[in-house]
Amino acid sequence: MPVASIDHTAFVPQALARVRADSPLVQCLTNSVVTGFTANVLLALGASPAMVDIPEEAGPFARVASGVLINLGTPHAEQRAAMVEAARAAGSAGTPWVLDPVAVGALPVRTALARELLRLRPTVIRGNASEIIALAGAGDGGRGVDSSDGVGAAEESARELARTAGCVVAVSGPVDLVTDGVRSARIANGDALLTRVTGGGCALGAVMAAFAAVEEDRFAAVVAAVTTYTVAAELAAKESSGPGSFAVAFLDALAALDEADLGERAALS
Image 1 (tube, helix red, strand yellow):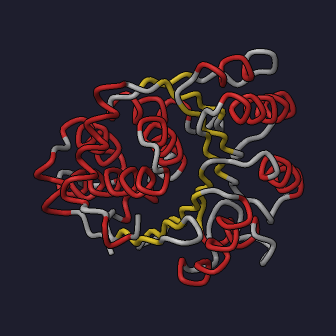
Image 2 (cartoon, rainbow, N blue to C red):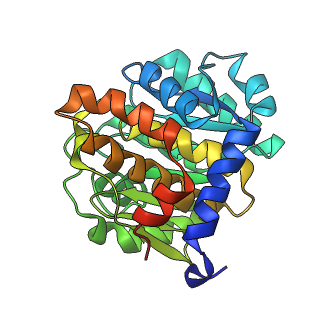
Image 3 (cartoon, helix red, strand yellow):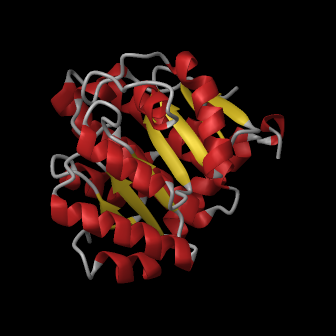
């Protein structure tokens, strides 16, 4: 499906409706800072979260989950083993899984883990520009979890990474980029307050896993996930006075989001 054939006024709300109807079970192996926020985002969206991230449980659960998120934010030893176990199980079961290579390139333990997980063929990779450039082998990462590169600088790395890994790559920034190596889309929605809430980026990976679980075209699924998430952020920002009120309003906006909101606000190109 070429980018031009995605009618976001129809496809994005249809994908969101499928998530709400199917309530996909999303297994989250994520960082300790964001577990609560990520679970609440999935619940507000209409999905079902499960934080199963220990060895001997992670693999069996990945086989029955609808989708899996692997986020490298705080990768302690036991969780690292569980992540590899879950990725292998998801691959063998055909469960879509999302890799979020937090601070890859900048720190050695997570960089080695990210490269091991990359060999297990994630369905989707989500990161900021510096993380995507580093994972593609074209840079050394950003400033910890913060990007030191713009989305445009990561475009070729994202396309090459998508082609070589056989996955969809999403680069987060003021204008998000999604590519499968052939097709590309840009989503110019969102609000800067998302960057002022812990978990604002991490929870997006879980949302991508939920959409990938209900949509066979994984490129279109990720476009729909990013659009839904960032439109909700815009609506929440209108009701907020700062990061604290935004976090609450964002959950409410995700739960209340409808076809009219998406049709009026989605800025896809």
